[in-house]
Every structure is written in structure tokens, then in C-alpha cells.
Length: 239
Ligand SMILES: C[S@@+](CC[C@H](N)C(=O)[O-])C[C@H]1O[C@@H](n2cnc3c(N)ncnc32)[C@H](O)[C@@H]1O
Image 1 (cartoon, helix red, strand yellow):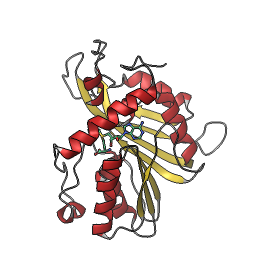
Image 2 (cartoon, protein in one colour; image 1 turned 45 degrees about the vertical axis):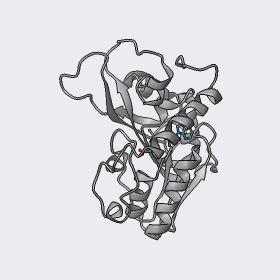
Image 3 (cartoon, protein in one colour; image 1 turned 120 degrees about the vertical axis):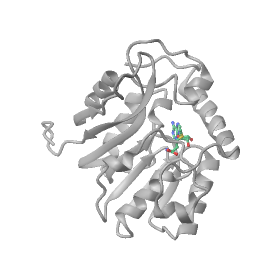
Image 4 (cartoon, helix red, strand yellow; image 1 turned 135 degrees about the vertical axis):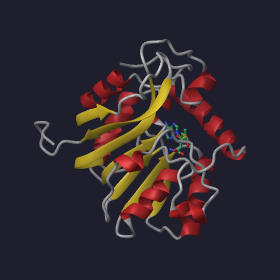
């Protein structure tokens, strides 16, 4: 189930992705894509996402949330607002400039229960069964090792925990150009929904589904959607 990647190995690809997003942050490409009370106070927190994992996450006050590839903090800060000060949010990202921007926003907003940790989503710097919800917004498609990312998300979730990954998908079977900039822009690595769902099931998730593509979408076109899954409570796979 490994995809071809436009690099010799995963580490080389991560270096390309890190450089790409450091530059995009510096050039101020993206504005917030949703209005929220957090962003009235922090309008310099850009979203690089392709959907809204938070809308599908059903956060509960006091819950613990992990954001894979948290970027400048757009979704993690909103999650912190949703779980409240009795909860906790951890954003993991590998790009120092993104972490710096996210930490500055959290401090300015007085959100002491969100922290941004440097690390990779293929080797999460978190203990087993330590979070209630894993979210992500336009990140997993950038990984050279999707099964490993899903295994790590599964490890970090508590039994019964929810996986809500917003990401790019490609409709139909048209071949994506395997070019490095297109990969970094969340295009070339876009998932096939059936393969991504099968990978999530193979990692141990149940109740796996991917939101439907927009009506009338042409073959080969990419679109944003959310993969939903649950870590089972019982060892036999029942949620
Ligand atoms: C398209 S941006 C999305 C950022 C954020 N989720 C948002 O919606 O604004 C991709 C982010 O994922 C991070 N990233 C990509 N691959 C990663 C990996 N393997 N491990 C950790 N972070 C990664 C990048 O540093 C970047 O901040």
C-alpha cells in the first residue's frame, strides 16, 4: 500500500515539505478560512487546510485533542477554545517557523492548555492511549508513509477515541503528476478514498468512512474531505 513518492526517501521529502511551508508562511499566502472568536484576536493565524476537521470532531469540554501537522495553529487553537481550560490540545508539527507562530498566538490568546510540540507524525512524541480525538488538516497526504501515520494515531488514541482527518483526495483513477512541488501543495499525494479507508482499517480503526466527493466532480480532480474512524474499545474490533 506504499505510494510512489517524488524523493529518494521519507526524510528527504520531509525536508522539501518543511522548506515549502516555511516559505509559504513567510509570504503570508493564506488568511483564516473561518470566522471564530479566537481569530478576531489573532488574525495572523493562517489556515493551510483543506476542510474543517473540527466540525466533524464533536469535541467535549475537558477532552484531549491531538492535531497532526498543526501548522500555525488554526485548528488546534479553535479546538482549545472548544475543549476549554479543563481540556488539553497538543499540536505536532515538524516546521520550526510554524511552531513559533502557533506558540505566539496561543500565548497572546491566553490559551495555556494548548501546546505545540516539534516532531513528525510518523513518530509521534506522545505516549500510548493519551488522547481522545486526533484531528488533522491537509497533512497526511504529505507523508511518504501513510500506514505509519495511521498506526501512530491509533497508538496515541484512547480506546473509543475518534480520528477525523481532513485531507485531499483524488476522484477517479487519473494519474497524478509525481512532481515535488505538486506533492508539497497537497496535490500529487492526494489519497484515493478507498485506499485511505483500507489503510485506516488495517491500522485498527473501525467505523471508517470518507465523506463523499462533491457532486459532478470530474475524474482526476482533487477535493477536500474528512476520513472518519474510531479506535475500538474492545480487542475484537467493536467500538
Ligand atoms: C498544508 S499545511 C497544514 C497546516 C495546518 N494543519 C492548517 O490546516 O493550517 C501542512 C503542515 O504539516 C506539516 N507537516 C507535513 N508533513 C509533516 C510530517 N511528516 N510530520 C510533521 N509535520 C508535518 C508542515 O510542517 C505544515 O505545517
